[in-house]
Length: 323
Image (tube, rainbow, N blue to C red; front, side):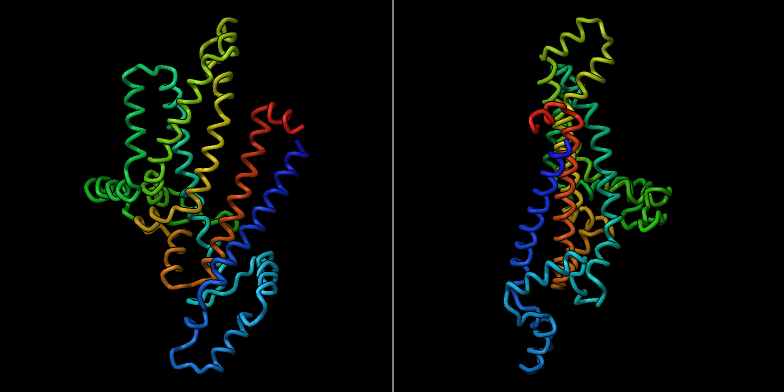
């Protein structure tokens, strides 16, 4: 197992290195920040001074090495707009996005897995068909439309929940989270539910497919032939064997929500990283965009590493194949 983790870690480092090159090429070689930083009346000498201050007069290879060295220290420069550290701005917004993604995926798994198992156990039942029809609907509805409908129903018509913004937060070391007080949780429910609609639909379909695949297997038949209770057959033998696809999809979708919750954060004015990214793209604040992309790359790479490790814990066959 240790050798598997080491190999995956080396692959993760290689992925991060390759992606850093793509980020550098995509943002540092396209466009000229001097045109944005210098006033229209600036002279050529003033523009050249700004270019030297940014290190843009150096050869590309040296610029990339400097970029890597600063990235290793989490230094991506200062925001063109505010003058603050770009990484600091991202890290200040990251807890809001993390708790939004975590609650959304938690709702998706807690609702989707039981419904998917039920639909897999009774595929011809009317309830199972209704569940699958609902999952198709969850896939089909646009994310922003779901958010607007939830705002219209629960915020405007019923007045139960706030329409946007983030409630009061509680400090847990460096993290400031709103999910641990009632007012903050009320602000979190609508955006998390908006994301959970589509993710829950996906979890339902994956769980149902895995359940249908596992039911005819010999270990399920043998467990029932031994006279084990149905709860034990489903809770131990079935659930453990359908966890691989659920962990795979859950991990990938969690990373996707963390990296691309832009629409939901914009609809609900949620002060997360996605909204900051949109604001930075509009204002051409390149250091903030670079810091966001690199942090997202590292997060997704480490998340994939954790999913791979979870495989080895859940399925002994993965350890045997690695050996």
